[in-house]
Image 1 (cartoon, rainbow, N blue to C red):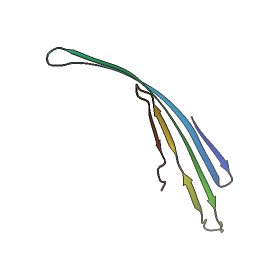
Image 2: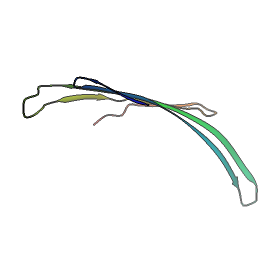
Image 3: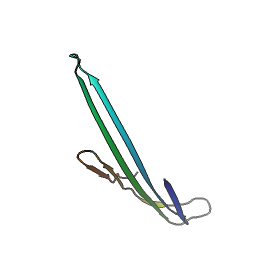
Image 4: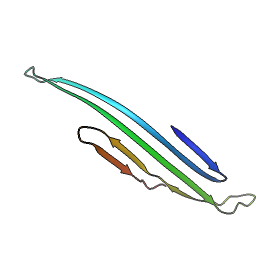
Length: 91
């Protein structure tokens, strides 16, 4: 689910994504012994991106500077719960 909101030249984008995975693994080794593993994994991620534009706009050219921050978080629920976060530098 993604959203975009405009405020003049400024822009805000945000969204949420929820995913679910099921793994059903079965393997027979060279001795004929079977190995099985079943696992359910859930993941939720969200983001917020805000672009702030300011400057002077002459008739032929537009001089703008933008500030852009990003942040992400993901939670993986397994027998041992794992959390991941990131804030990559934007170009």
